[in-house]
Image (tube, rainbow, N blue to C red):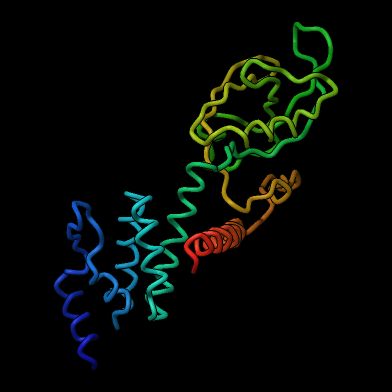
Length: 246
């Protein structure tokens, strides 16, 4: 066993890999974290990666800069790969927080509907499916509800209410609240929905509702999200390296 590997094992055993030390008045990961990323122990490598990610998420600007710098300098494949994974997650988190699209969690169809007590036909959005543990579920939206208005605005009969609704939700920041006017069992009511964050790689067409068995179409959203994150990160990394000249 090499001297470096023996040293790394001793550090991990003593718990030193989890320490932070001050640098120029700011906390940054101890350099020994990098050695722990290359430890003989898989548990030590995985634990240190999680700790680095947790640290970077708490201070994303500094964390992104540190991870990117160390990723560029790393020569050990294991260290480089784990730094890249942590960097990807922080970069995507920040993108989603600042630029992410709003999300409700329903499937829907356009309907022409007459509102009780009012004249004329209006365009509405009938909810055909509600995703479990979604903003829609938390707000109390149900299958069969018809959305006839959003933030006190209604759609004209000729409007494509579904496309309009999707566009407004996507353009609204996650965490913001939308006031929906709902027609349920012949009665109008208002329901406030706090938008979640739309998962990267989630296309509307992949969430069609199967009326036959009452379940969402089986789609590997985790894989779609993973692929979308990787594609986004590749572009980010290329731009970052071009700016830095490396």
